[in-house]
Image 1 (cartoon, rainbow, N blue to C red):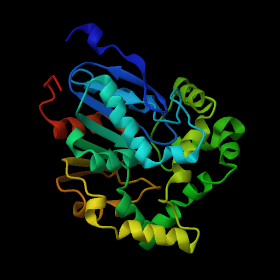
Image 2: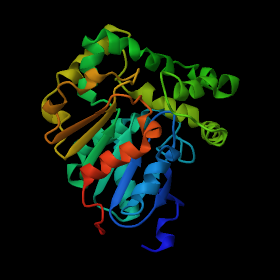
Image 3: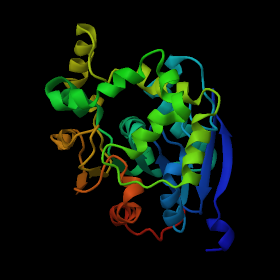
Length: 306
């Protein structure tokens, strides 16, 4: 492969109502990486470097984040819009199908995308991101998960932007480096994260994912009823029929391992790989191990073409 094929490149695609920024490395089949909160495309730098030798490895800033558009209305962060972004991005990049890799909130988008567009997903890799029906069940039935997810209701509050930006984004920085995290950020990476959070509207964009979603600890009988409807919905509403690998750092203090129980009821072709000494930030803590698990699952990574 020519050297220029593996250089990191940046670009934009214009979709119906948003402009998405993305970073890309390599050529061939599309491997798309979706970040979570409060990250941005650079969460996947180790993966872009590794898989860019075999794929067109692409990591976008999801809508609301960093250099992508930040629509003002909460409703514009509904899962239907988020999944349409992924389809539109792939189309603009010239790909019909993809290997889809996602973490945290990116995983929420990826679960829904694989459910809605199964013919477009070759393989799905989820890292520490709960399946929606399983998560609804855990929020209803597991007091420990309900307590661990209490921060979600804080992030839904109107003054969350003020709290998160106070003291030079101390809350967000602590969220990345606390909770048993073994992720050692250097000063340069800290500056890049703060720069991403400082983009006008970026905090609100990321928080709107929480504000529009029903998946949070119920604060009223009405919200509890919505969770119950999700947990008891017909299987096909949340079924994933593509080959799926779930990688889970078991020391995740926010998303507990109960989210793995019963997952096979919704995922036809499921492989689970647990990392006992990994936290929620296992992608950063153990990038080589994560890359090896993804590569083994994807297989034949020397293929090219779409």
